[in-house]
Length: 240
DNA sequence: GCGACAG
DNA sequence: ATCTTGTCGC
Image (cartoon, rainbow, N blue to C red; front, side):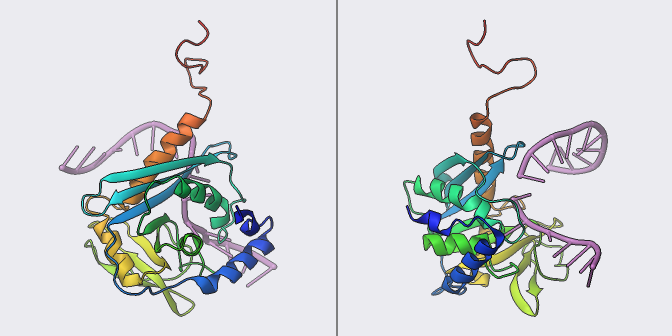
């Protein structure tokens, strides 16, 4: 109910929020965490750009089966500005998290955590706001330099930005483009990498991200008034 | 000053 | 993010 307090309307306000929350992020955690359940979060956008669907899926880490899920449809809460990405998706993601009937032990975010220009990416933000351990898994870099990891799954290289190690470039599949793992909240980088490998037994991206991606895409399609070729989009029993 | 820039 | 044809591989 007080979350609007942290929903800035300008770039300057957004940066101020990040500067205020950044000290609250725990970039180490108490020790190795082996979560029983892990949540994946993702958002899909309508091409019109004024509608989005956020999804959260909770997986059992032992079986990778989905044990809980929730979606929230809404509008982007902020323009797309690299570095301020969280303000765009956070409200919808938090709304979806509130709809879960279980409490996941770790959040796996589609984007970066520490590997951010001000060291406070989406994963840090979500972690601090929810109080849950969180990590970021990005498909492309936002900041930093690295050397190409070996070809084999499990190979990695430090992601370094302005002299600081802010994440790890991790190969999750043999010979496939690596992902960018960074700490969000209450978990170490080594622990985060370990979790990502446990979530990628078959594909490049974590199963959490994949299931959440499918869910938000489906939710978005269901939320858009159908207007496809061959029909007026009124569904069964339409104009007839 | 110029380019780069998570989703 | 979203829009896209074809192509390679299991």
